[in-house]
Image (cartoon, rainbow, N blue to C red; front, side):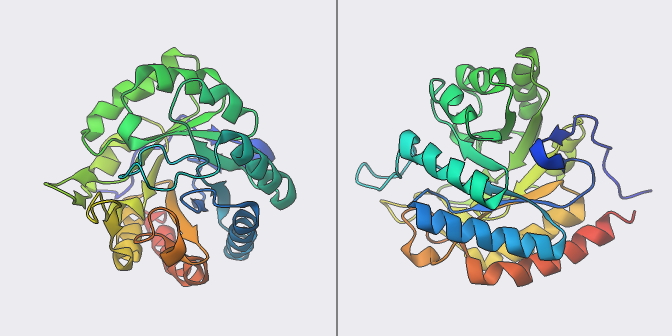
Length: 281
């Protein structure tokens, strides 16, 4: 039996020749939230350099608004106006595609003016109006599987995008709820979702999150990130999603599970070797 998942029939094609689902390792990474221009540029430049040296395709990610924070008092980010300005600068000066998430249908057209990929947060994966609005922009759409959803439920989400005229769709696994404040990852779900013919990404940092575990914020176990990342690559995913910050302990959100920028290279070096082995078979 060959340990190879079904070939992708609907690849993602972005400007600059970047293709997701064509066999090349793709990293989607950046800070959880846009905290400022200087920090985003630092992360984007650092990750671009590492990825170029390692031969990895790179997409910068960051959120202009964290609309699903645990507490009303939690910081949310810079907002859509300033957020798009910063993402536009990252895109222009670093020369990398950018991804950001949208939480309401009206945000999609605005975000699509700059972002190459619109992301549907896991909590909102079943919100039809949001999914359709994102798909109708014509931009690539990355839908995160809800923590409450089965892998096969995502087939209907793909259908919403395709019915809206957009086949540039990818799915991201970020774990499933396992009791309270805990997530687990069922690796068989990666195989199931990829069997639909669309690229599948593994979110290695949110998969180790402890949602709401700190009361007013989420906890997490960043030390497990490399292990789950390698496991997903051994299964055969098309790319890795990871949140990376210059100083995770000072991040305004997901401080417990983001990877420090200085630590990302050795993690990726190991991951690449796993990915190469998987793709031999």
